[in-house]
Image (cartoon, rainbow, N blue to C red; front, side, top):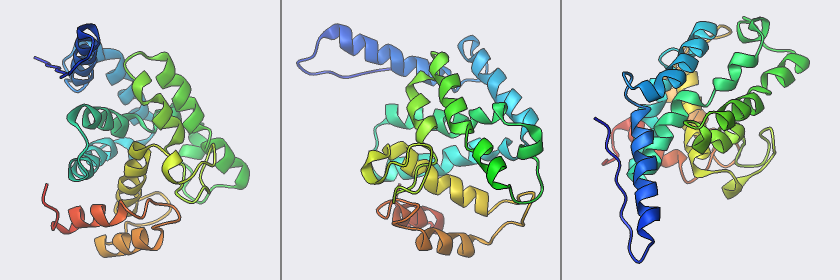
Length: 221
């Protein structure tokens, strides 16, 4: 059974019911047996079938992101959306050719430009699926960097949604600590050092120490 709730004060009761229903629908997406999530689960399987890196990546991301979210005080309905975001941030890769996804070496400039299209492809897919539309904008912006050097929009700082800044750190850490076709996994300490090196450029400098506390086991969740 999926449950959604909302609390309102001096608010139209219809708006409160609508928020509660939206929260319930988000929870339904996280139950694999849910009929409502059948299309969403089909998209996951399509992505896993084409990109072996994705398998397990979404689950690990959800754990890392939810730990950060609770530590910085995000409400449960935002954490539910964050879990969804962790699973589907790379859904646009279904539109990227295998010759690029599975290339064992580094990408050429043209191939890199084509790979970067996955943000916009994912945005269009999520925008057209009612269950994913709440996270469509995050999917578009999940490769933006704190200093404005990211893509596709080149926005920076707090112009980037908080959820994207959380994912950027967790995603980079998971990528660094797992094998890739072109390199072996880094150690945990090496990955933490790289996060610190890129704090304030690629990553939100306020969030990096929070994440490292979680990895070190010193955070109180």
